[in-house]
Every structure is written in C-alpha cells, then in structure tokens.
Length: 84
Image 1: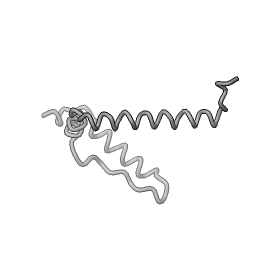
Image 2: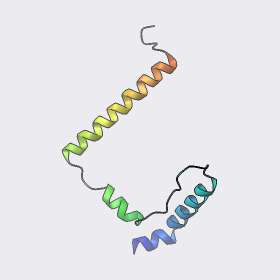
Image 3: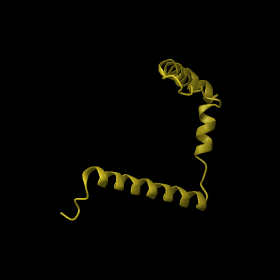
Image 4: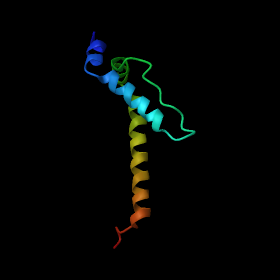
C-alpha cells in the first residue's frame, strides 16, 4: 500500500527519469546506473534497523578517519597556521 503511495507521489517516476537521463549523458566507459531493484520503503526499513555495538564503533571509527583526512587535506591546502 505504501509503495502505491510512493508511486503516486512520483518517487519511482523521478528515479526512473533520473537514471535514464544520467545514462544518456554519461561519458563513454562509465558504467550505467540501474533502476531500483527493491522498493524504496524496503530499503529504508532495512537501513533503520538497530545497530550492534560493534557496528556503532565501526561507524564512529570511520567518522574519525574521515575527519582526520579532511583536516590533513585542509592543512596541506591552506598551510598549518595554528602556530602563527
């Protein structure tokens, strides 16, 4: 029933048009995008599951790694001005 409402609200149509236009405008050698294989709400429900403690720690570690990478990139680009 909910997927019917999503379809009526244009979510599936928008995705189909986006995939089509993206594939038409893609450069040669770029792999084509695919239309959704599963309903939007099924994917959302799966992503909203409760994480285990190990998964939470993994997410936190990935965030710290991204932040450290961003900081080093910023310092390379703008120079380390913290000692100035």
